[in-house]
Image 1 (cartoon, rainbow, N blue to C red):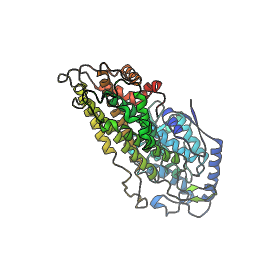
Image 2 (cartoon, one colour):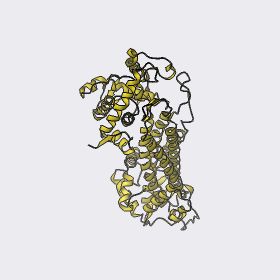
Image 3 (cartoon, rainbow, N blue to C red):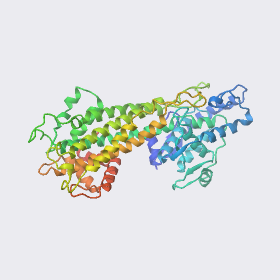
Image 4 (cartoon, rainbow, N blue to C red):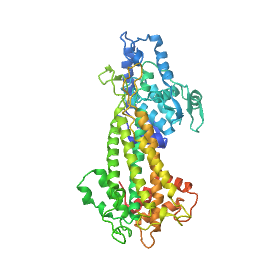
Length: 512
């Protein structure tokens, strides 16, 4: 099993995905445990003094004005977890919860939060046991941390609430811990607060979204090339010298991908045949510009994610010189903005893909293809309603592209008077990327069917590889009408799993 070692200097996107999706084993380094112990000594020293310190000997949020006596501090830490575990709605996906826990553990291991080594080691043990706290959809405003989601995780650490075992069965968390020989943690000063005060949920979803969108952008380049080929378009617009004079890196990468897929095609360049076209439609000609803008947006999002992965987000924090200082680093704005930005890019990528699909189905614009790519148009409807489904998905994605991060609802008696809504931005982005995979899948079904209907013309070797792979995956080609939903589902899985890119790369070489 792959092992991820957590030190004091943050983590990587690859490690987050390995833990969240691949069930990688987590180990806390000796260096990190030593740093955690050192910062804990600072907290213990402060706890012994009469001076009030936020999170150590005071209440929280708007209640921070109250000094808490030593005999009530353990209860204070338990209470903040119990009261903040106030999420509602459907359960959040297992991979999101594992990313959330791992990233919180990463910050605790930095030595900047003041928890005991026991807390970090117990979190690692819970992850390694495959125990996943039950976390609910609603409860985070993306400021002061993803409070409710992290609280539900902290509740499991205490042996309270519900969690899912490695077999998928939900049980009381205390029972699951006992079954795996894990002792619940009795929280001490600062520890309850430290477990809740981070951007870990929205960051985990950002990291996974970046990986998913990267794969979908490459898949969209492939389907765009197939559509260009099926519409007898020209590949001349993909020439490197044209993209060099507008040097956006993403645009150049998408154009190069499409050109690689189209190499050796017998279908391209027929735009001057029976019905001459000076230029292809925007949805064909501008495909690299739109997908490329998405690529550059993704590059910015990855930069933000990498910075956040290197961060220690808590309030207050233990600084290297021993000072314990309050701060606002828990505010999710940097993460929320790029989550919203990616939803915009995904919606536009889906929109242009849908326009290409519609063009393939319209006999007045498809340059000789049968209406709706049907076997016997009129008797058969072909892919007419597949495009309806695609259009419905695109419409939904446009609504999901409305930014969450421009909203704010004050909370905690106006102490927390401006929040990021980053968790909400992350949740809607996950829905948008699910929809994008389906939109690309519909274009794949249409484009492969259209290419096969171009009898007498030979598609590129890369396209032939796609045709072979997609048909082997159970997505049927041209013919009379049949139950279409299973074909679309198989195409979706083909795209989502990265098999479309895997099909072409043996021919094209690695695509960007």
